[in-house]
Length: 303
Length: 258
Image (cartoon, rainbow over all chains, first blue to last red; front, side, top):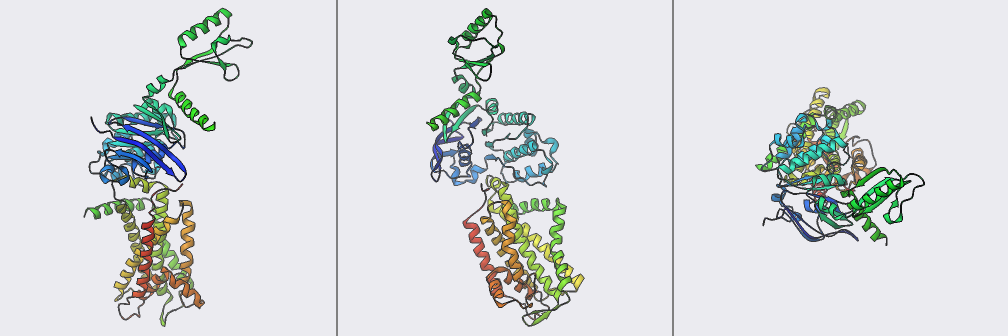
């Protein structure tokens, strides 16, 4: 039984009267891509910064690669790559010089060409940092995090502000990391990103982890499928479908048994001579799970 | 040895960045000369009485602009770049690597001190060529020691003020407000014999700039017979440096503030 890369028990962080993190447990294994999701202010960044050694905790146990990050051990830093939200790189150095500068901080750095290949900046290697596009600068951030050939890489919102093409590029890059055998702790706002990239996902709301599973596991636990369509004017659906109207003329039926309901629905429509326009059957996505979980917490709060 | 290697490595990247921004580099290098030329043009044909020994206006201003260079390179530019780097997340990023934070810090300090030395050479050489100001002879060791103590004191004070500056936008205003008045009352812009009220001298004597400029006046005074060592001025400067160091170490400032 190997040691987990990250092991957290009962982690707490208080800022005065505010409890930012309220008893978080986490276990992340070698080679996993683990995504931490949650709305703004959920305590994701605080949690990650405690793991990185940037912040002291108020309570609980934390082990990262067997070390307590709060003690700031150099041996731990040599095996970590941290990609923060803000860039802050020297604008007048070239891409290769920037990566080399950081490679020099580590005992066994990743070869420069390997770093460039993983992040896809081979063609920009001699370009000045200030001439890079936003997406390229973000890749350079990741490159700098990879320079020391880390065992564990923290990626804090790696694609925020990207256009769709740049995001696909970044996803390919994160998949490259997996093939290198890196353990990645990803925080993100984008649920599709977590769904596509992560082996496991934890959803954090108000300082607590409210769900944790593989993306498919989380979605599978979501028992209802949504059937949506548009009814022509004047037509009324029988009560038994348990439907509700969403926006003008659009109807949604949520059901754990889509096969039977769809059959009954189409039977009824054909018999009544009604066309169900824009008919879609929509399996739950991670987004639905997320919205339900975060929504539940919000309403708990309101009551 | 490894320590020195890490610092030199940081210095190499600092120097490269400096060289690659020619506009900034040019004005950094030209800045003290602009002041030297302007002040000498306005007050240069007037002799300056330095406590009984009279020197030419240009001689006074060479020592004064060297003092300005120490303050500007060490205090102003170190404080501003530190806050700027802190806000941009540069310092936080460094803290996440195995590089010891002080290696980064000393790389930056070595860089500002090198700029200071280069500017000093430029100012002194220009003074010699354009105005015939005598180079320090027997007083050279005093000038070098004063530069060293001055660099220590103003680097430490620059890091100390950085701890109280909330963000990069506020940096120029706070740094300038803290240093410009002292430059006016401490024999840098205005010669000491213009008949300012006595209390001005009492005020300036409390602060470090006055002691830096007086020690340099002696170091550049061609009529100074001995080595011109100024233990009191250097002592006050060093005390300010130690105070700055304590503040900087007591409230280390590496993270952007919200």
